[in-house]
Length: 73
Ligand SMILES: [Zn+2]
Image (cartoon, rainbow, N blue to C red; front, top):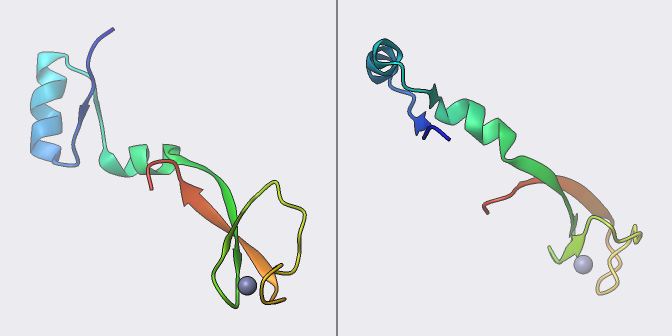
């Protein structure tokens, strides 16, 4: 498997293209890394699994909202 260079520098991307090396921009990679959801309490900010069926926080009773998370955070 060929290594893929990750860069947003267009001049480097041009050089890589000429040399026949695969590259990927950081921006594209960032979008791919968004993998799931987490639930967070509006009151005390406690984090719940997105699988959790609770709609209110078990600690403070505030509503829980869903938030997108990235894999590497
Ligand atoms: Zn809470």
